[in-house]
Length: 167
Image: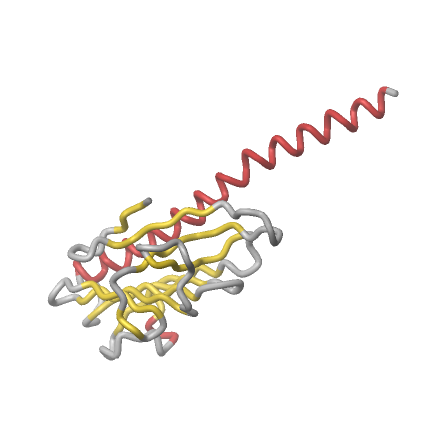
């Protein structure tokens, strides 16, 4: 009987710990994405490396990866490993990146989202795949069982400054 009661108490402790840890892990993943966007923006503003622009690239979906890169050749794309400044793979974690339209909560058909910060002009451009877009949210979502609503955190970018606006 005592063993049975101990098992029940252990199960309750495990489930309550999980409900506390999961939101913290989501906040950590989201904060890291925000810091990466701000890192790309700050690199463009300070011009530490010799590059005309800096970008943030998010691969959307199950094998999500976030990358900050120096656009040294001016094509606005992350084309060479030598351009990589910082990398954050979310594959193997319980989280993935997503994008939605600002006006509607429906997902966008993006496989990648890019944010480009130009060094000389301070211009900020967002891309859904290779199409420029101004009406986009980027976020981190918990992977869940089908039918469950995932926990999410998302942000937009201020069009003039490129500062993340957390929702």
